[in-house]
Image (cartoon, rainbow, N blue to C red):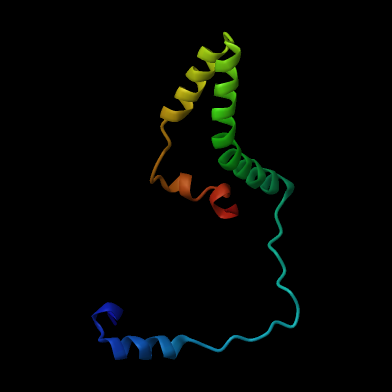
Length: 102
């Protein structure tokens, strides 16, 4: 059945046929068990995703204000990370443990 080819009433009927009323759980759901390695991997991922966008401007600005000689190396490193190729649309990249964790 092509759901999108149905008229509006038939679509609502199809929704109604698969929807069930919500039930209260007798106890809280048990979270998935992660190994220590998987837990550290997920934590590092979120720290990188949330921390790097905040860290890069702060470090760049502080190096610029101080007139540090490390500014050129910092900008070179940030430029390398910005233009580093990420393997898009590769099955092994999408199906790795990080994808499962997130």
